[in-house]
Length: 213
Image (cartoon, rainbow, N blue to C red; front, side):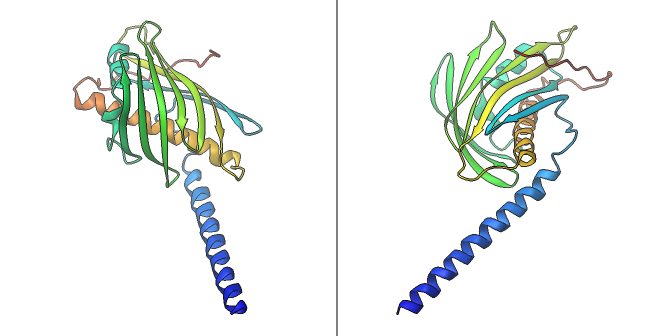
C-alpha cells in the first residue's frame, strides 16, 4: 500500500513539474515576439529594481484628446475588441472612478485582474491601481495633444510588482508589460474606429518624448 502511495505521489510531482516546465517554455517563446520595437509603442523605458519594475511607455492615437479620454472612460467596451482582452466587466462605478474586472491573456497565459480606474478630465489623466491580481500596478495614462490637436500621445507611467511565488525573468516581464500596454492601445483604437473617430494616418508619424512625471 505504501509503495502505491509513493508511486501516485511521484506521478503527481512529475506531472506538476512537467506542466510548470511546459508553461515556462511557452511563456519564454511567446516573450520573444515582444522584444524590440512594437508598432503600438513609440517610446519605451522599463527598468527593474529587485521585484519592482518602473515603466514609461507611450503610444500615438490618431484622434483628439477628448475622444481618447472618452474611450478610456468606457473600459467595458474593450472586451473582445482584441484577442487578448477576453472580458472587461465594470463591478463598481462612480462619476470619477470605475472598478473593472479584466480577463486577459498575456504571453499566452490567462490573467484575471481587478483594477480601479480614476478619471481626471482637467489633467487629462487616467489613474490605474490594482485591487486584486498576481501583479500590483499603480500608475497613470497621461494624454498629450499633438500641435494641431488632431492626435494624442498616450504616456503611461507606472510601478509594477509581481506577487508570483517564483521570480519572473526580466525579459519575460518586460515583454508582458509591453503586450498588455499594446493590447489596450489597440482596443482603444478599435473602439474609436467603430465610432468613426479614428483618423486615417496619412501624414508622417508624430510622436513625443517621454519625460519623468
